[in-house]
Length: 275
Ligand SMILES: [Zn+2]
Image 1: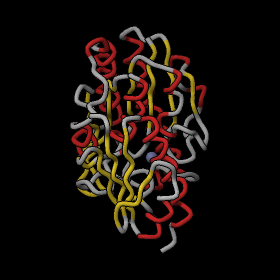
Image 2: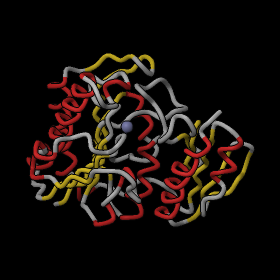
Image 3: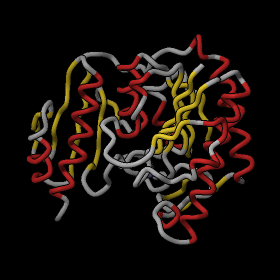
Image 4: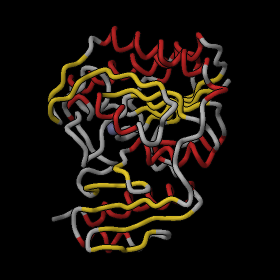
């Protein structure tokens, strides 16, 4: 039983500010301790239910936020930048179930701590098959391509709500209630970790009944950008078609190709960030 954990940082209990998510500094050191606690809590639950192999993909910032030797379960650590599959790197090697830990709300949704969709300076709104989608649903394209169900998602209330259309079977753990993008009522880290461990255990126990992400194919990913320049640059990506002044559309029946086009859009549009 192999578990693949894609973890972000903004959705961890106790984190409400960028200073806790970006080095250097004391707030960041606190943030990465909180993050490690939740990742290890998910690992502990998976191991308790019989998981034998854990792969953790660091999906936040420079993507090397944890001390590798402090990961539980002798987990493999996928870290560092320029990953072809970004937040889902190494899932292509196969797994039995995906966990999403520390996830956050989309940029265009209700207030959610540090909400964004990949790049807050560029991406203003994304829909998948007509429904607003955050990083969980976009990353689910890779899970669908690999035929792996998503068993767990953790974050604030909004993160859980946005997972509903695409991750119907996933256990949800709400560790904080955001009232703005920079304020939330946070569970105590010990309470959040206990909830994550329990849900991770349930997810692994239920794995045989979990279905792949609910994304109908062919699918349409509509990416709205902040400026027309960004949409122009984005349209240079293979698979991305300019469909509006500030919009590109990525479509097709190959979810992996769609995700790769989306990742390329997030990379190339960094060149057009200036406004
Ligand atoms: Zn992040």
